[in-house]
Structure formats: structure tokens, C-alpha cells
Image (cartoon, rainbow, N blue to C red; front, side, top):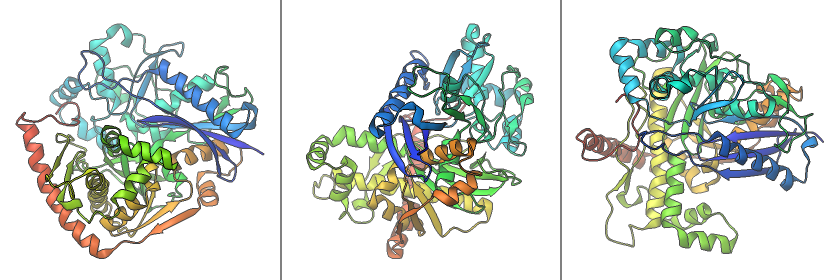
Length: 517
């Protein structure tokens, strides 16, 4: 029996997942990790590559142990990661500096770019589909300005998933779906645009080879990983795009929502489609040749739920452990009778996507009451689920207006899709049929597909997706609830604008603000 391994480096955790060649998940090893703000560097989110590499290796070994397999049993592996996070290396391939995805330290550099290069963000966006908010250019400029001795040594750049593959194989490279999120990339050509870097005065010779997803890179050379030197290392890609492949979302017009630490709403569009002039959404290269993805993002949805669980639900954790179920399953059970609208409770966390000018209000709950029968942990939990769905629906509406495509079906995956209440709420909020695949960890399955393509187990990603994706559940919308949620959505948007104005007046603090705003 051949086995494939996927290493999935998300915002909140890293996991190693083993699949057989039929797409059946065999085992998983997972560790939570944190990306912390550096001392005296506001809004930073550093990536501790030394500590985190240890966690990656522990995940690999745990997955092998649980599956009762050895490293020799893994014929090939690939990796996927949070996009936008970058790693910089010296000429010997040694890491110098790294940041996670929403690192926002480079606000001065973004302002400098906008003030000194008129229209440059709009120009680069039309080429790459990315703004400076999460891009690599301002961050590299920050390093040049603040740590010049480190900047001088920089010889290569990669994404975090690429870093895992580089650690394992010794080969530094990237792919279009992940590398494209640096913003130094062409949607059309699916490759680096080094002239973007030289235009703004940063190094233009640090870009590694671009390999399509599924390209064989070499063998495992890392001896402390627990893997065999016979295991093949294969180019992976961005978590959302590989997750889409793992969901079978490989054809033009298909729609998916990935409900993880962040929630992404994606629609497959032709790669010839130019990004919208208003920069309201982002556009990324897909892992499928000829396709891009129009994308909306909801910030921190999964992380907010984890915060709520850990801050307020200690008793539920104990009860869930005693019953042998997940704490979130217990919370859904206790929240199932909370009515639509959660007694008016209105969470203020992520805004809908405004990619060109992106910042959030201060985290809060509005409309709380002092009636414990209606305002309690369970109504607040339900309100958070509703809120993630409402913001997703708003983002999909923006994409619908841009693409002129109509949606009636959404594929839903990631940790959130394991919740029956959350899945039904998503159907009710969007008015669409929600389809759940049997393997809800679609990002890992997509990476395993890539590994299989690299060693000839599958012809290509599209073929693999059609062979392996099996549907588990379908949720039909309650259209009466849908009408109620349409009203709630309008009120939420009005309330959010007012909450943003408090940030504008320096009365409250933004949950996250793009650099340069």
C-alpha cells in the first residue's frame, strides 16, 4: 500500500496528515502554534522558524506513529500553508527572517510607496490581483530600513509551505498559487515580476524558480524529520487553492468556503479575467492551469471561536471530555435552540472585505442584555457562527457583482464544516445549498493530491479531484430564515460602519489594520 503525506501550515496550527491513494485519511499529527508580536515592533507577527520546525517534525512523527507506519511507507509528500507569510534566506539557504500571514509592521513603507509612486498600488494590483495590505514588498522594505545588516544577506524568498519543502529537500522554490500572494507576480504569466521590486528599490534577484503544483522537487534529505530518504518531495501550493482542489472545486464557476482560522470565500474564474478596478477583492492564481480565483476573506473567524472557547467555556471543556466529544460539538448541542439572530446579539469582529482600504473595528459584542436566559454563552456562541456566515455572504455578493456569476451551491470545508449547526446556518444565511465533503480537511487532501501527481499516482490535480472527492452531507436553506438573515445582515453592516467610525476617532482600537492606513 502506498501512502501520501500532506503538511498543512495554517495560521493557528500545523498538521501532518497521511492519506492512502484513494484519498482516505489514515492519521493526523497536529500542534497549535502562535505567531507573536516582536518587542518594539507594533503590529508585527513573526514566524519562529526554528521552534516551528520542531513542531513540524513532531507532527510528522505523530502521524506516522498513529498510523503505525514508518517513514519508508510514505511514497511522497507535499506541503501547503497560510499564504502571504514569507521566509527570507541567505546565499546558503539558511533562514534569516520570517513573518506570518497578517504581519502588518510595514505601515510606514506602505505610506511611502503610495506617496512617492503615484498609482503604483493600482498598477501592481492589475498585474497581480494583490494590494500592499498583505504583500511582500512593504515587508522587505521594512527589513531594509530597520535591519539593514539582515537585508544585505538576503538571497532568496519563499512562502512558508515552500520553507517546509526546502527544509525537507534542500530545494528553495515556490508555485504560482502561493507565491502569487506576495504581489510580486503576474496572474497571466504565473511567474515572478522582478521589475516590481527594482521599481521600488529593493532586491530583484531573490526570486527562486516557480514550479507548478505537483512538480517533483527531489527526495527527503532531512534526517530529523522521521521520513525516509526515499520519500519524494513535491511542490505544493496555497492553502485556499489546494483546499479548493481537495473539495473538487476545479471547474470555472464553482464556489467554495474554507472555514479555518480565517474564512475564505472563493469563486473559480478564467485566468484572463482582469481584477476589478475598485480593488474590493483579491484575485489569485489557482492551482488549476487556466483558472484564477476571485476571493473574499473573513478575518480570524476560527481564531475568534477558539478564543471564545478558551476564555469562557472551561466547564464545557470538562463536560465534553467526560462525554468523549469535542467541545465545539457540545456548544452546538447547547446552542441549537437559540433562535435566528441570537436574541439580537451582534458580534463585531471581521469586516467584509475591502481589499483596497482594509481595517477592522474594535472586537466587541453589541446588543447584550442582562437577561441570562437569552444572553449567555450559548446565544453568544450562536451569534459568532451567524456572524461568520453573514460576512461570508457579503463577500460572495461582491464577487457575484464583479464576475456576473450566479451561485446556488457552495462547497464548505475546514474545521467549521464539521459543525452541523454552523453548516445549516451557512445555508440559511446564503440561501444556497451547502455540500460537505467526507474529508473536511480539504487543504490537506489537496496537498496529498499534489504529492500523488508528482509521483504519477494521479494524472493531474483535476483528475485526482474528480476521483477522490466524495460527498458526505448536504444542507438545504430554510428560506424563511434566509429572509430574516437578510435583514440582520443590513443592520449589521450599518452597525459596523458606526463601530469603524470609533476607530477613526481614536476612541477604540482596530482589531487589525492594513499597513499604511
